Amino acid sequence: MNLSNLQPAEGSTHNQNKRVGRGEGSGKGGTAARGHKGAKSRSGYSKKIGFEGGQMPLQRRVPKFGFKNINRVEYQGINLDALQTLVDNGIVTDTVDFTVFVQNRLATKNEVVKILGRGELKAKLKVSAHKFTATAKAAIEAAGGEAVTI
Image 1 (tube, rainbow, N blue to C red):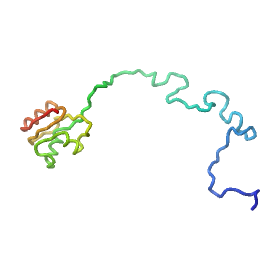
Image 2: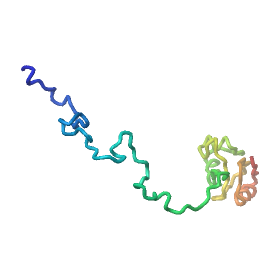
Image 3: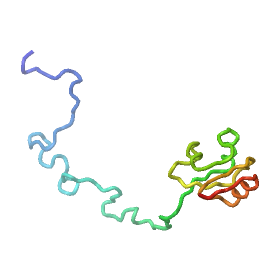
Image 4: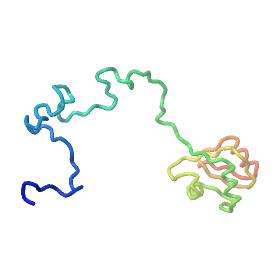
């Protein structure tokens, strides 16, 4: 072994890339394999998302329609059959309020709860929620309970 036949250990080097822009003698000098002129030959170039070479982009070509109400209140719906399940499992007996919904993962602490009328309620419950549908309120009162709006 001498200085003329030294080489790195097998598997210790990984970079097989051609070093561009390192002089004419390398064969990749001058334009550094980027071609001549234009945005793509410049340093710092990055194509904008959706850029179509100056053509009007699709996102601007298609018609816009509809309306998004920023004041809309999104309710977390809880049906009567979910309340009946809570009663059947022995989780609640007489009152159901927002903390019960959060503890049983029917709603999160930041949500607004609306009681919906699917299913039937046999138990007499005092239900506290932000909103009630007409059928849900009627069903709760028909079972002898009370619907309290928070």
